[in-house]
Figure (cartoon, rainbow, N blue to C red):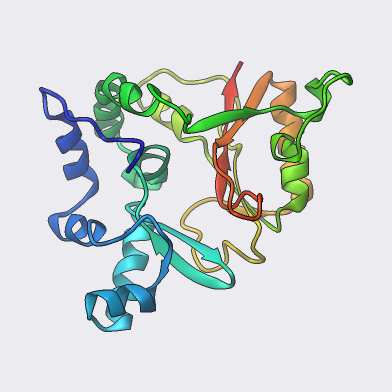
Length: 239
């Protein structure tokens, strides 16, 4: 993956992988590609029964080891980076104090790989109320315009605040404000491991609450070929 997964002298990165993957899961993950594929496409490529592959992929997506999303009305699966990706998907009981401690140990090494070169993995998106009127803001830089164009929304807890709470460093800001959105209709109906599906109006209410708390919004620094964002995370971070 372009973001990198640097090795360390202590081997903490391997302990993280052992915490998240079984050997069988890891073997399957290495056969996935970053490009989205349906279960039928993966099964054909690996010469295995479709239902066997679909069950395995669904289970791995449930564990946050790969991504599953809806594109063009089809449920697809793909390999994802460690951050933003696998780690953020370690929710529910899979985010343990042990994993949080491993991540804190690995963080400085990882930051050098993910943040030391362009293009950056994430970027801040301004909110209308905070933008001076003498500036022109492009559509992809306007969080409200992005959500206006989106068709599906899901709300989950902030992974960073959950991790800090496990380590005894509880954040005073709202934890339940990480928004996933998609340009697909009913994008989260097939796979929704945690959180709840919300409406566009509820997403706007969360933006208002975040702004009142003094938070800003970030997202993946990517666009699809039509210039629309899809299935990206908008976590709020302290400013």
